[in-house]
Image 1 (tube, rainbow, N blue to C red):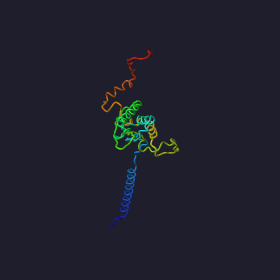
Image 2: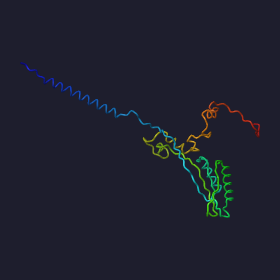
Image 3: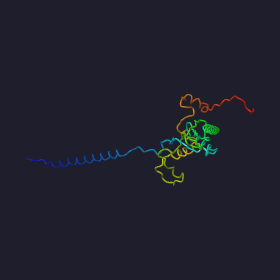
Image 4: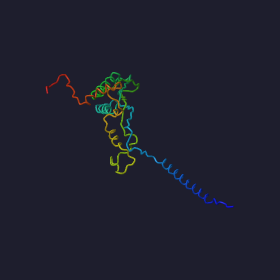
Length: 231
């Protein structure tokens, strides 16, 4: 009787299993490696808008300090940063012979007139009695103010600008410097909010009619009326 030696076959099976194990492990490792790879690269462009902050400004000034220079500075700041109506209140003492309601009314009228001459026309004005105030009236000023700032995440300028050393600047996002300059130079920050001068009730067709002549390049017709010269 002859016995068949199966040992080589067993070794062959073990060898095949080992090779399959190695191949499976390699495939699994490569799969994990591919999972860890992300083909998406974050953008280097700034994708945030210029920040516009709104705050309520309140000034409490002794009326003796309210002169032409003060009113001029107030008008300039409101023209650039103001939004909405400016509220003005002049105080008086009901028991004072000098700081009376009539005097407060006249003072308030002069201030409103001066502001209108400087282009500030949206003003709410009034007088207010203050007991035991004495002869020194006060001027209370309140209005909303808007300021423009660099976009969120644009903490530093582009390397080479504003004294920043030239370098790699890997954290810098393209467009931050331009937006920062716009925020500093814009004439009226409130305009960055997109609030047009035509009002909220303006529809698309009406807005298009306003700029249609500029878009097509058509020449505006001459306006009628009187003139001081024929040229």
